[in-house]
Image (cartoon, rainbow, N blue to C red; front, side, top):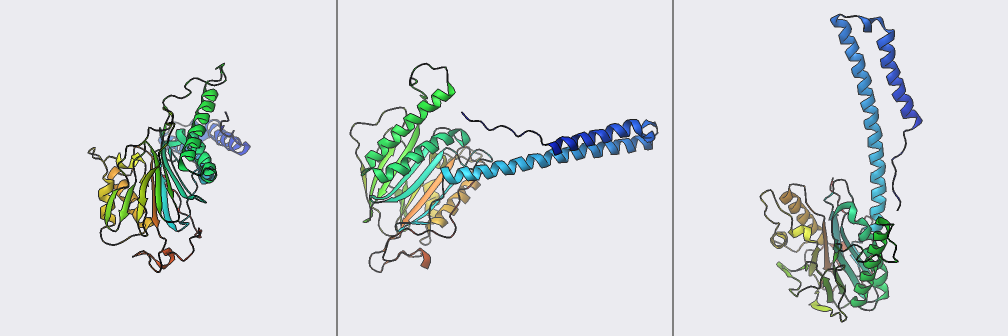
Length: 365
């Protein structure tokens, strides 16, 4: 297993430290004022040592800030690969997504999401790895990497889910070997028994037909005009990891996603968020408040939810949070979504279009 090592002190840093120390020692033993016992001499001596100490502290602080900026650049590069920004439009759907890490300074955590346009329709995944922060990043990378391949290769959602199950099991076995190199067998028994991932898979075809497979994840909310309701109330499958998938996987049909209707996908860190009095965050109530007056864009919904969440938790969420809002912006004839900007309305072709700037996941600092 590769580990990042701290960079050794540079020659310049060592030279500056030795120079400041030499100044202090030289003043103490070479300056006549330093050997005097008067009050004024003591003040001058204290000022000299204070200046030397302040210089050392300033140098250390400057070095640490430089290392922190470098670490953040590396984290942003890793973020763009693991949890890459979603395009604002994908095959006639308008998307907005962001993630909030509970670990201060972390850019990504244990939540994952992705949306891909395939020949089978737009396929979306939203998941939550056990744990949060950087400790769950390896599992997030394994699941997302498998989804990005399986979404194109598998003709049905059941095949995609089985590919994700195999990728997760393989990742956990490899992690168990790395953590316990003395294990003699080819595969550790029950490599990481407590690890699991909740997953929601969606497929939206060209006609808006919506299929879903849910493994222990909260069902998303459907927004139609000012009405907010759960997409489904069916019992989900167990999370991936502790139990194998059933032999027969039944894909759940959630009806059509009509033009101008939206879906709000989220992880359990949203509804589990508490305020200082221990009260849970009301996601459905916040959504109804956000869409009460007029149809709003996914970006507006996302912004309203994050603003309410940060206010509710005092800016300190206890778990990773991920939100993904998508709206069916496909037109039928000359119909377009009320309240949509000219740039948000669909043309006759439902091709993916990349905006000049991508929405970036939110980082908790």
